[in-house]
Length: 328
Image 1: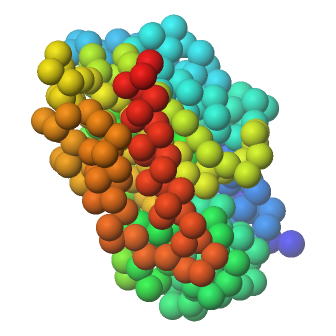
Image 2: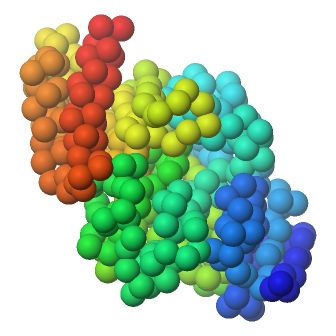
């Protein structure tokens, strides 16, 4: 048995100092994934610094009309907050389609940004995995990879990012606010999630001891009509095979004037569909153009025999979602 120490921080400064002083330590928020990984032996910190008592559960308006979400706000509370439901319904839907109700009641928004992949080879603690043990190899490449990524992959890792709400936040251009040993930082969320490339074990740009304290979501009028649709093998408590976040505005001439589109379940990171957005903005909102935009987005998909269906699946999901937005 490996000894594990526990410290409940009473302030942000205490939490940052405690983790910064011990290179083998980690923050503990909701713990819904982290404790599983400790039990499985996938991670083995010698010290967990509990941040649940920190005053970071707020949900408040910002001066520029957006919303600031405290890092310790629970997923279920954020999902049902009237200002989120009204201004960012797609984000609310993404939260409510993640995990189970029990987990959503415990999981924090900041912790969700740092949750690890659900790749079985990463979690079993025995199979070669470059994300868990750099240089050991990737068992998923020729293994059971039906649920794995087709976008943003590398020859080091094809694990999907599991978060639903992160897909919404990427589409909404949210920012992550942190406090660490070197001060405060604001990180655009699309830069927060790192593709595997040659260093799949490095998943975000946080320094050791740097704590997420809030997530800022800007004021976006188009987000009031946003939606999140999740396709999966069963109707609840399951990760996405393909999910789509969309927020679209069409002008009086029937042309797409604004579009925010992101995908889950297909990328190594929450996937902002920039190519599809660029292909559609300014063009007629037709099924043919939706299909062309989906083709553009999936053009560089890299598949394995078990997950090649995701290319067609993702294209159809994009076309269906945008078509339903128009018809509604």
